[in-house]
Length: 264
Ligand SMILES: NC(=O)c1ccc[n+]([C@@H]2O[C@H](COP(=O)([O-])OP(=O)(O)OC[C@H]3O[C@@H](n4cnc5c(N)ncnc54)[C@H](O)[C@@H]3O)[C@@H](O)[C@H]2O)c1
Image (tube, rainbow, N blue to C red; front, side, top):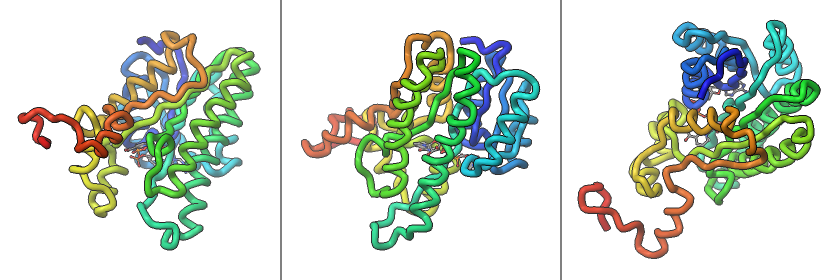
């Protein structure tokens, strides 16, 4: 895969999956713009990655999104957008999950993702080319005790389909990638706060480990690249077989080999 001469905005590129995407594109010739709420962290990543630059952006703020896209397009058209910026949610029952937290997750994960698409997509459509990849989640594909995050990510998957149909006629492709449990600073925070158990997350996947951010980046890059020129409107899970493995718990669990460390 080559991204020579391509300008790619990666929101949330200062950390985790976004950072891995930025590294993946830059290593293959892409000019990456790391757009993140944490400007200092984004600048730090941009210093590490040759061929990248940093931009301050809160994706949930319409004015900031417009300003960021204007700034990014000053040096030429943006070829691709990867919407990685997002926040996770605590696993609270509805009676304990405040509407403030519920709204914030929706505001960032759904509204923010839509805003970035809605500002850049029409420019891409007018040029007759461009690709967008939205990071959703397996939590948007199955139920989980995440009553704001799950519905927000389900809506991102649906939004991806709507926008793929909207801009397909103008040559813009829009796809989603749904990560399983991926070892990032956000996940580590969840583990440290005892919201998530590493043992349970590993046991839930067929392959029996956590996803590495680079594995998400590879799928994102494929969907962004011309290799995926025939693909639009899809949601690609990168979950180590979490979606296919979890129903097996009703039948006593997966048949792990003795040396996999998880025997039944
Ligand atoms: N880690 C996982 O297991 C996992 C699983 C499924 C989906 N995801 C999704 O992947 C994406 C990246 O998650 P991660 O685990 O790498 O998290 P992370 O916290 O490591 O990175 C997220 C980045 O997004 C930025 N960000 C947050 N809110 C922002 C905003 N309003 N505007 C701009 N930037 C903002 C943060 O500053 C941070 O740099 C998220 O959309 C998340 O929902 C993660």
